[in-house]
Image (cartoon, rainbow, N blue to C red; front, side, top):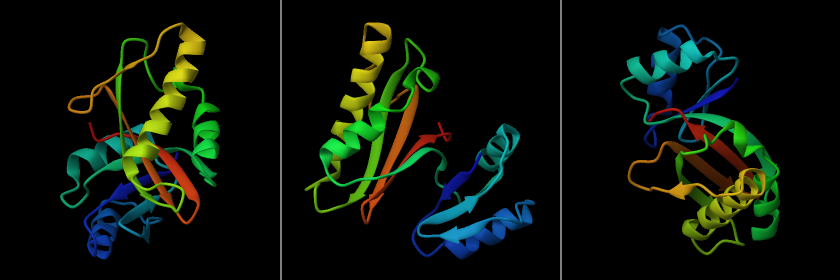
Length: 156
């Protein structure tokens, strides 16, 4: 598994140094965070618990091209959400979007939520509830330059 560890703007080098000192020598700086390849569940717990600089630890579920709202919906709906969202779980979607097809990030988050709920309704016969304050499953949508990444937030 690959992990994206987020941080505040301009703290990427500091986070990178911290993660390397924790033993993650393959960590690579990126915009607003650091990618760490080949992590285990134990690594995810360790980073969540020990990092002082990290904000969120995001496990990418899928990367895809985003051309418009319909392509976002189709890509998200193609994921098997029964593996990520337990039957009684609530969900929330945090989004950061810079794309001409989306006037605001809330619209992209709503299209993502619709795709997840529609897919789970087809699979289970009911849809999950949304709880933005205290969800059981929190997802993160990032779209920039027509490239999208949907991630599972391990930081809860």
